[in-house]
Length: 107
Image 1: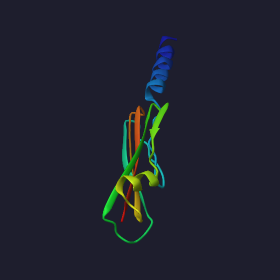
Image 2 (image 1 turned 90 degrees about the vertical axis):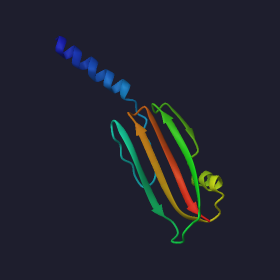
Image 3 (image 1 turned 60 degrees about the vertical axis):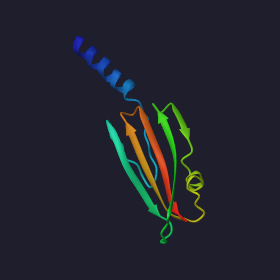
Image 4 (image 1 turned 120 degrees about the vertical axis):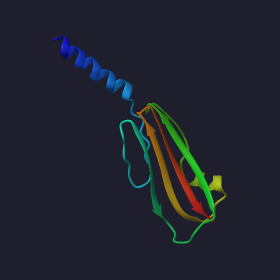
């Protein structure tokens, strides 16, 4: 009975302390239990760009989320009027903290 109790307590602690903060953006998402750090992209226009703008949103424990990771915010941050392509940079640590950034390249 003690072994079962310890197992249940350990499982409960892992669930509670694991959090559920996950960063996702782009055409999909991946999730690593300890750490996730990846980029997703998608071409919009075949022309190149000389300007870059970035906009981010973050989450803590999946309970608090703030920021504006929209393409519009990234365009404004880089002074971009014509979008060449959009990338997404995502990061999550232990499900405690997650961040998702939209990166816009254009003119």
